[in-house]
Length: 233
Picture (cartoon, rainbow, N blue to C red):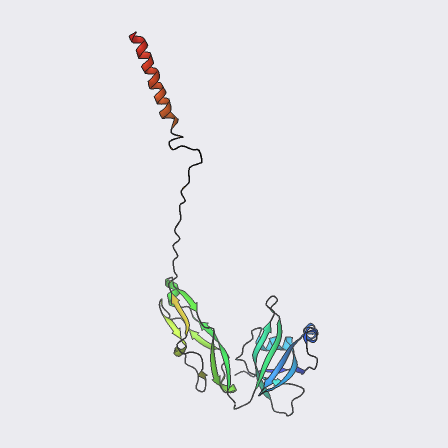
């Protein structure tokens, strides 16, 4: 696992106004938790996103250094939770959890899908049901991501949590029967058109509006009969 580190600074000012000032100054307000203890810190935004390359993950463990470390031993931590502005995407607050060598941690590892499912080439759709798997392991054994190869998924096939093989020492805590991804035929929705009957206009009598040709034809017959009667006289 690639060595990563982050240096943070202790903070004494807390509250919304203090947090806003920190953000304007290029810091992210945060708290480091460890076995019931907590320490308020400020994290340089630039260093934090350099560490995570713009994508925050619970599965990245890093060495953390603060100005209040009581000994020279390196401390390790990971991001347990964070708050994000839903509009701007700005990270508003970070919860870090300090871990101890030899002590197991319980966290989530993101799934990375690789390959193109062969079923999608036949008109199927790849549906993703799970994007992370919950695991328990020692910090040194924690994978940063879990790769799932979907290349051989045909239409009707699926991959479940129980199909995932992880390194020894990493225990899966998620539901083993849960579906991770599947390929299915898209559903076709048939929309029936409803033909509305047009009601006759009020006052309109059925039969009105017949072809004028028929009416004219009747008048011609009537004139013809009158003419024949005159000739006979």
